[in-house]
Image (tube, rainbow, N blue to C red; front, top):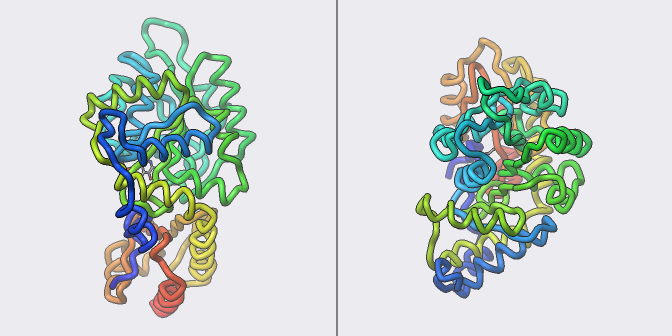
Length: 338
Ligand SMILES: *Cc1c(COP(=O)(O)O)cnc(C)c1O
């Protein structure tokens, strides 16, 4: 089988996860009767010190429900220009909430309280109404970059002063928590709503959670329904998510170490112009003109390694549960001989 560095979404359930799925107790979740879904939602809420959580099919759904909760037509979402919610959710900010978007520049996808302050619209009928700030952590297009807690608190302060809500796209939040030694409960304190993905580095086959206050999550359930996202015996997949939250968080450091090891090797190679700082499981590097994206990716593929182009001369590697120590050794050998 190929070595697959295209994404951390490609993992299959481990035998132990599979076992947890097969033995899950299930019921009709639209009747509020699936005990495994309920257990997953309760565990996630407790981890973040919040009232409630809602299990959904995807991170796009949890982000979009979060945005809908906070925004209505004529409102505006403030976020980095490379945010997943803007670039990769099929125009959902407009389609689901009818909201406008204010895109910020920022270092490796991270924005600051100062950037936010400067982007807030005046109270004037000509302008959309600034309503929500959305952060992404880790930042995918920023190469898995992570926020410092101090900056997040400063952004929270700015939001408070101006009556804005604060949402987190935490598709890879656990990578950030592990890399920075941060604490989930502090995130629960600072954000109004948090989206986390179980199907990225945590290795579950399906699912994301929206975490927040009681009233918000109650409304979120209704919004999920109108999106066609209420479901029945979802406990079979929720069991995989529960297993992942219990067993697959601390091990993320192994993925980070593998990415950093490849970063070190790449820095010494003549066909690499630049390697972005590597903090977590995403590694982005820039090729010299020896290769184009496609000639480089073809060479890798000939050697049984899959990866993605991520912009002009930019290649992305993502490490994950199924990228083993042997895969790392083989990949480094191949990189050195190209
Ligand atoms: C994967 C991802 C999401 C959610 O994507 P789905 O494919 O809808 O689950 C959201 N934000 C970021 C940064 C992501 O990488």
